[in-house]
Image (cartoon, rainbow, N blue to C red; front, side):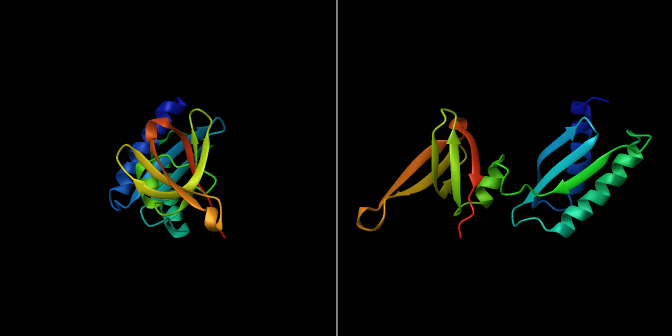
Length: 156
């Protein structure tokens, strides 16, 4: 079975499981040559470790029942995408509205600011330049087509 076929089949199993809880959604699914299947789930209100464990057990059982790995030589990891993972889906942008983010454009330019607004086509990023009396707020309207990646920034 090719990786592409495996990804498609595992995605279908997962979509069936996720129908029970529509607030959860698949962000990404990766398969390494060592038969390591990595599933990244997210939810509109965050994903708990308990939910990751639940989906891991349910998906593991379905993969075993499908008989794709007769020797049982596969591993499965289900987690939420960490803060080091870029946003990949519109729902992730919407969920993170109001948080600080770093946006890298296709031309290599980087902008940091508050995810002010999320539209169907893009985002409005509010950048604050300077400090005190020289403080200036600039809103950047960015189309998703021009965004290479967006990462949420942790602010302490």
